[in-house]
Each structure stands twice: as C-alpha cells, then as structure tokens.
Image (cartoon, rainbow, N blue to C red; front, top):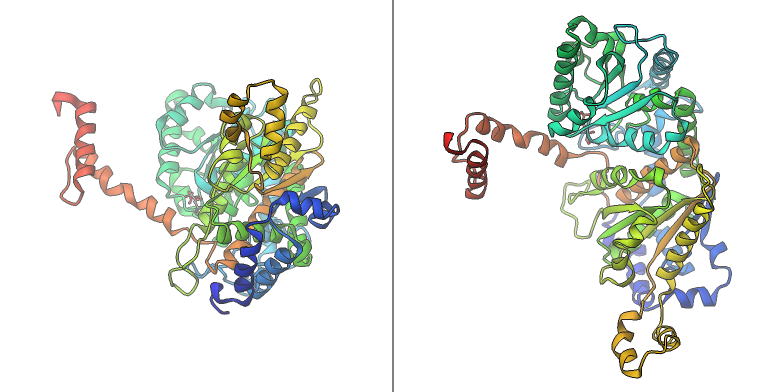
Length: 551
Ligand code: G6Q
C-alpha cells in the first residue's frame, strides 16, 4: 500500500478540496432538491442524513475511492476473521465475536472461540437470574438491591453509558452504581447510601492489577468487613470479571463467581463481554441479548453493505474529509436524549484511545492529522452553552446530532419541542444567516440606521457548518447496541485510513506506571533528584498545606 498522502484518491481529494472549500451548502441544497435522498442511508430503524455536509457527489465518490484504495474492505474482513490486526500486542480484535449471534465459528489460533463466548453468556444468565429472582441473597438473607461496579476506563465507561441509557428497562428495586475514580470521594459517597447486606460488588478489571480499581476494591472490602464483622461473607458479596483468575482468587473471589473474558477483547470494546455484567444484573439477560442482537445487525451491515451505503464507512470518511482536508481539530456528538448523556464520555475513550496515535503500522511518524478530539453534551442544554462557538466561532466543529422520534416519557408535548430544536439547529448551522437576511430582521425592529450599522456584523451567521443527523424510532437495547457498534466501526475505518493500529493503548499503559515512584516519595515525605523543580516545588507545597509546621 502506498503512503496515504501519495495515494491517487488522496491527491484527487486535495485538488477537489480547492473547489469545495469555497462552496456553500446553501447553494448545494438549492441546486439539488433530491439532496436528502441522495445523501442519506438506513440500517434497521436508524436513519443517517448526511446531506448537511460540505460534499458533492464527486466528493463522496472520491472519499469512497480513498476507502477502497486504503483497503478498508480487506482490513474489515481481516478483523472479522480474527487476524492479529493489533500488531503491537500480537492479537486479534474480536469484539464482533462477542455478539456473533449467528454463532458461526470464529477462529483464533486454530480454535473456535464461540463455545467459550456462549459459555460465559450462559454463566451471566444463570447468575443474573439467581440474583434478580431473589435466589442469590446477601449473607443475612436480604435481597440484593445495589450492584456496585468497581472498574475504570473500558471496565467502567461502556457498562455505565448503557445502564444510564437503559434505565426504563431496569428491574424495579435494583440499583446500579459505578465507582471508578481513585479519589476516595467516589466510593465514599456511594457507600453512604447502601447497606452491605444488600450490596453486590463486581470487581471489573481485565488485568486485575489496575491501581485505581484495586485500591477501591480493597477499600470496599474493608468497609464491608468492618460494617458486617463477617469476613466469610465476602465471597457472597464480591464477584469478579477478569482475565486474571489468579489475582481474583488472591482477593477472595470464588472461582465459580469469576466471569472470564479474553485478551482479544480490548478494554474499550469490552462492554459486550462479561464486563457487561452490571448491565445484565440491572436490565436482565434478555435485554442484554437484544443489545448484542442490535450490535450484530450493525456488524452485518458493516461487513456486507457496499461502502457507498455503509453507515460506519460514510461517517468515517466524512470525518477524514474534515480532519485532514478542512483541518478540523475536533468532532462533537450532540444527543438530543437525556438517557444518552454519558455517550460522549464513552465515545471519547473509544475514539481518542483508539486513534490518538502518531506512529503508523510501519513504525514511522505520520505526517497528517489522526484522531480528532471528541466532545459533546446533550441537547437542548448545550444550545445555551457552547453552541455560540459552533454558530459563530472561528474553529470548524463537525458534529453528529442524534435523536429518537419517540420519547419514553411523553410530557405535555415537550419531546416535540426537543425535536423542533434539533431540526432548527442543524438547519441554522447549515444555512447560516446572510447579511441581507440579518439586515431585514433588524429593520423590522425599527432601529436607527446608525444602530443597525453597528450591530449588523454581529448578527450575521456564516453557516456552512457540517452536521450528520442520526434519527431512530425509540431508544431501546437493540438500537443502542447498533449505535455503539456503529461508532466502533467508524473508528476502525478511520484507523485503517490513517494506517495506525486502533487497538493498542500504550499511552494508557504508560499512565498506569507513572504515579508509582512519586507515590513512594509521598509516603516518605521526601523530594527526589529525579524530579524537575516544578514537580518538587509542588510536592513541597503539598507537604506544607497538608502537614504545615509538623513537616
Ligand atoms: C481500554 C483501556 C483502559 C482499560 C482500563 C482498565 O481500552 O485499555 O481504559 O480498560 O485501564 O483496565 P483493567 O480492566 O485492566 O483494569
């Protein structure tokens, strides 16, 4: 494969960009009344309208040519086939096998992994039915009412976004909590409101060595034993999700209460595995399987739909267009759905941990931009905050807007107002407001000519701000599964184009080691010649604040 910037389609896109950068979407819509039909795609009940993008049919064809030239189809097939595409960790990336509802064999090193995937799913069903049905109780016979997941990063963000989003499907009387931060406040504030007798702790850690998770797990265990004065009840109230059985045993988890997953499941792609256990306890296994079904449907769409109608591919290539040709530094995700308020946090990890890379697959430094900064909030809240920058700021921010057609909570027509805002914002971002339109508006307000001249420049909106609109019927487990899988594949396609490995995370691994030495320094209340003067100055300042003269 030739270098990205030397590809034929890349060069053609560079030339095409010179024309398009001066074209306004208003003109494109005026020229083609069929633009919505031309530039929209569907999968199940998910509609993607990408007509409000700075593209023509020629731009779209060139982007698809780039996807072909970079061999997106070949890489996609290799991923599904279990090839070791995670080249720096020598392993496949097989989150698709976790939701392979067809149950067709998926081979890793000559072994079909589907029997073990199914075995853990069956274990999750059995365990969750016992807990939810009141057969598995706390040591004193109380029903389990509070599931507390202790995990961080991939062992937290995925299940957390799903549990939040699927709240209407939760079992009555069952609460779920997520503890991730090593800041003791996180755990403490949760433990204040629960009783150990009715709590079930899930220690979720692929490695079972992550500092934050292990600190929180040991503190929770200590709290449990202190309050109950019953060490032998730990095994009944602590279960583990991990690839490291040995460490989980050392902690005191019984082997029958361990839920396994495998090194070919990356942390940020793991919510479909046993890491989804809090989801299952909160919603039930049937709902979890519906979510797997939705994700599998998106997998099949991604695997077999021609690139031109393939939703993850389209989203990915539009992202490449803005990232690499318009120099957009970020991408916003705005969901007009309160249940999806944690989606940006999950997508931040998924996207930025996967594609925040500078070195290509051949070990060389890339000379083009890779993964964007992902951010976002729920609408309509953010209209009253950062939308000012989207409308009139100097930075281009392409955005995905997302909304269900129907709400689960009909209240005095409020959802219709939400929809109106959704439509109005994407329309305004596309159209903008011309000087003539702004002038006409001001004139109707009866301002003096002098005042109008003063204020007019501030009332003009350039428009031409690209958005994707994603609409679905109702937010349910199936649709949520499909949406999450859609973003996973989008990120994968972009990684292929940028010729990077989207499945390692050495920056995160580095972070896991960094604090160790400094923690030893803090324990001995010393400073170190190894540190720079800023770090030593800050540490001394901390000692002064914390210990004062006693230091
Ligand atoms: C995800 C990352 C990272 C990881 C956490 C937790 O892809 O690898 O976010 O999930 O650091 O790791 P453990 O599950 O091993 O505790």
